[in-house]
Image 1 (cartoon, helix red, strand yellow):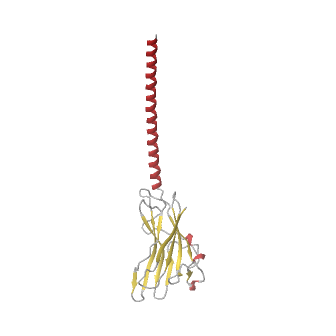
Image 2 (image 1 turned 45 degrees about the horizontal axis):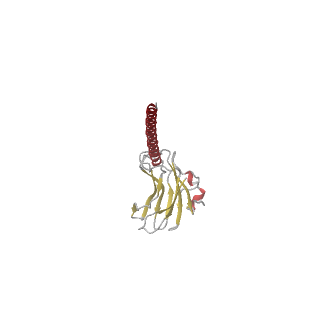
Amino acid sequence: MEAEANATHAVELQAKDTTNQASSVSHQQLLAAKDAENQRLASELSAFKEQTKPLEIDMPSTVRREDISERIVWKDDFVARVSNQNQTREVVGVVVRLLKIDPPLNGRKQYGSCTTDDCALRNIKFKFNDFAGDTLNGGVIGHVSILEAERTSLLTKVKFCGQWSSSHTNEFIPEPNKEYIFTMEVTANTLNRKEAQFKVSFPMPSVLPIVMSTAITTNMT
């Protein structure tokens, strides 16, 4: 009887040990599966974040483009560069806006008394120089002309590009060497809005660019 009981107990212990081992293997497999799923989700989230970066906007200084020797006139376009940081994703609905110039530029006096504050600058409809439409392919930089500048030995005058929506004149005279803050905005479907400010001046010496620009702040919302 005792031998039979011992044998039964041994079988029970062996069965329990087998069950524990199976449970341990099952638990390890479950942990491994959860770890693999977490890694997959982290990878997908990282890839998603990489493809939802906001657009970048920059406004470099101009270079002298044209020299008319009889009158010594220099002309150039002040151009914004919009960069799609998402390398494999095209972005649609890209809109570039000029929100404000501080202090405002004064309009030419022969066209009446006004400043850029009177002209609803944010309503100017700019377009890309490089392509039609508002879609920016992945990793691509698009160029948008913001204004045309013309400098003589006496003054600089500027005219905004794009579709001018104001009833006021689109011709302004910046003060020589005075610094203006241009606040720019770029938006696109499903991406955060990007706002950037640039310190802009219109120097008179012919050896300098017609428009000089330095980025000062950027904000994302």
